[in-house]
Image (cartoon, rainbow, N blue to C red; front, side, top):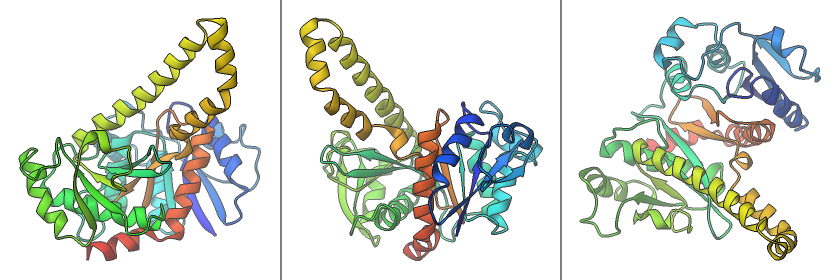
Length: 324
């Protein structure tokens, strides 16, 4: 049985939407869920008798200083849940709470995989051909060295192969051009390191190729990755909004919109973050996933699904072997 701890108090819609998502996911035959948070707020909302509750009377807020909050709020839902993972009472942890605090607490409680200097946040994007691409780092490390990008490529390759089930995943390095002389010092020095790594390195990838499927894994530093992530999120929302506005402008366009409604629904599903649910924090000596702060029940359910797959595939051991 896979035991997954869930931060009931993290995110904009906690604990209501977190609890709903857990109740939607609890029907999975091999998953047991542990809700961590204020039992006095959880109990009136929880209908399921199969979800175990672990009390934590403190909450790390989105605006709290990550390191300070982790040290001072020892009985926070994040700290208590990670202690469950550390003591093997849970196999993995999911939180929609403060990203910085989650990373800091995870490093303190679980540590890093041997050989990994910087854990990274990895996010899945859809490609135009119906596949998926994994980008990392998405914001954990704003300043990186070439060896960090090399490790990101190795970790991403293992995750793509074992959790996303991509055979011999292609790894690309994000740059402003494909020629070897292009880019800043970081990417130019990272190129030979990735070339010598035991990954299927395909060279530089330009931003316009992120969603084409040219690579299965794309590596960048956290500063660039976070910009890519936020731009992609806002662009997808803007496109949907503009389409809705244009459809409402006349009788003909409204009628056409009704005919195209199934297509729009499929498009929305393909670019919907909630379909993937959460991003793994790769490089930790334990399985931790970060859900979006705005996550609702659907995202929580999806996060539990992908988190369980990471446990089944023993992703920590796979990364450790890949690095060694």
